[in-house]
Image (cartoon, rainbow, N blue to C red; front, side, top):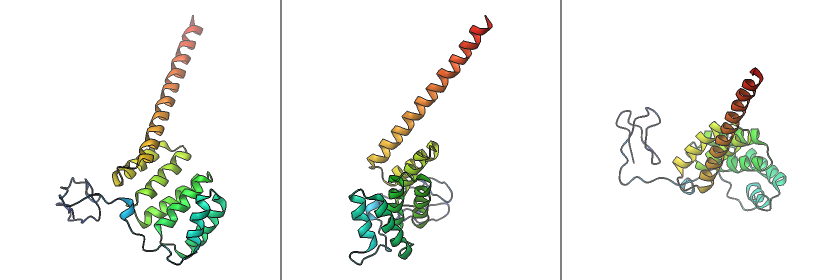
Length: 186
């Protein structure tokens, strides 16, 4: 397991820099990135037919309002489950409740800051709220934790492309205004 030589912090997953002192660390050859699937949520309900499983079935059937109610019920009992908070966030985002989806993603991250899926949900909610710079930062964290996340790469590309188009539009408007002002001065 990698250890920071400056502050001695141990890592449960592979990183390039120590979060405590921002010092670059050496990655041991035995250290490999932990993919989201390897992170175990010990607070997930195990009993069959629970509200979490019912919510997942309803979500897959695109019955998002009904799924939301099931996830809310599951969260009353399993408040420490970052997985349930993340799917709850995803459901809220599907219902275009971006502010609430952001809060749920942040709750999942408070429980497990290394869960790439929660970072992705946070980015998606921030994009829905038109907070693009923050969304890109969350997508960068997603890709640090899970470099193979193609959805995160796509969303980041879309946001960056849209931002460039907006900048170009403002540049053209500014040029037009200057040109128009020049014509009026003649």
